[in-house]
Length: 114
Length: 112
Image 1 (spheres, rainbow over the protein chains, first blue to last red):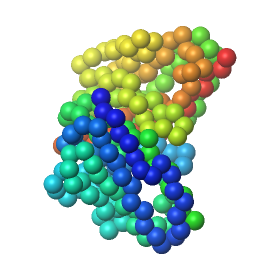
Image 2: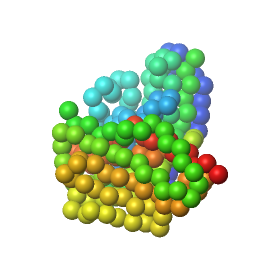
Image 3: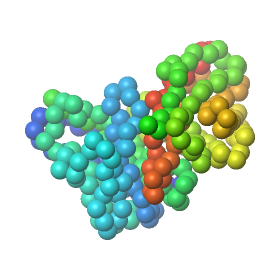
């Protein structure tokens, strides 16, 4: 298994600003994933983050809006840029320990944009 | 398009009964399906994975079935307890990195 922490746990931000969310894992992992969970909804994959290469974004998500860094095998950041109220969501990171197996999720970052 | 759907948004059952949650998929044949539990304010927690060649898998009071003919997975919680109240998500993996696509989830409430 893996233990994942996220910072911040929650934040309230003003429209037009940016917020960077950090994800730290207690072991080295190849793949990390970033999800968004809008109020009352299920999880939607934003992007897959590989160490040492560009993140791969899902349809509807772009790098300019959600830049991702993956500097090493235990850490990643997701930035939500130029925020609007529609970006108010919970943002979660996860890791997969072996291809094809389960994922382990962080506790999430609850973002409110006013 | 490839879809994974959980038909029930909410399910209420009496303590001690068996809860049965449904996950249907269309337009593809997943090699396996996963089930997660999510509590309010928490990230999902992995429960069970069932492969297409497995009819059934069990873990304590949990049981998952996989019917490739019906394109359906059923998730059962036997002898349910109020502590089982949570949202349960099914998910399929795809892509080279095995990215997960989640169903909409079923919110289970076990009434004492």
